[in-house]
Image (cartoon, rainbow, N blue to C red):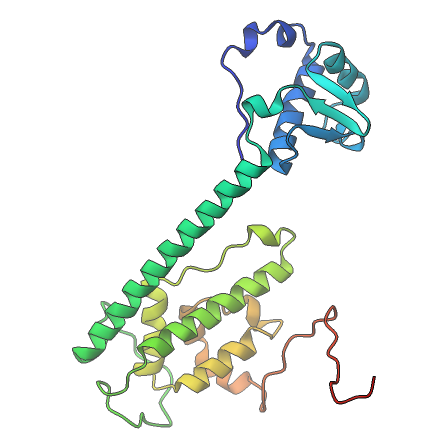
Amino acid sequence: MTWIRIDDTLPSNLKIGALPDRPFRLHIYALCWCGNQLTDGSIPTHMVTKLGVNGAKKHAQVLVDLGLWIKTSDGYQIHDYLKHQTSKKHAEQEKETNRVRAQKARERKMLAISNAVTNAERSGGVTLAHTHTPTHTPTHKHKNSLVQHSVGQEILDLCNLLADSVEANLKSKSKNPEKVTRPEISKAWVTQMDLLIRKDGHEVDEVREIIEWTQVDEFWSSNIMSPAKLRAQFDQLILKKPQGPVKPKALPHIRIEDQNSST
């Protein structure tokens, strides 16, 4: 999201003060649209009538006559737009800076969680504020003791697998995939995933298979979006999951070539 700047002396501006209501509204709407689309003040002809102001072409001519807009070969250019508003280049640089900053913050948080899990393992297991009585009776035992069975990184890997899958599913179903954010791997995520392994007695590979299956299943992909939901439904998921390997989602835009076939 970007912002447009409006001078606080706008009401006393001679050009703006001469504007009737609808041309004024068209001008403000156009500023917002250019800021949102990062066009550096350029407005295609076909967009003028889509800005929500009746009689837009007539009002656009008023703006041209007053020098607020400049007529171009394919539309209009808002006069001195870049003198007051953010350019596309600057907005993209700022977006990249924020992305890098957020990525570093996410990495620091993941490192802190990883260190916390590792330290808890060394002291004899993860200490949890809340306990949960498992509904599933383990049908197998860990090969090693709780202290020896180091699954810290594997727990984080499972959390990342679920977060990546949920993000991909949301983007595939969203009308605005660029606005979809990846689920945050919080302490609660790590805690629930750790309980699923350590307390409920499930193997890491078993949990990984269930995650992979639920995220390609039309029904379960919209219901299993966190380790807490995964853990609550795990017994039912074991019963529902088809036997055999998980089939990936069909990707009609990708064609797999047989490298052994003749060309």
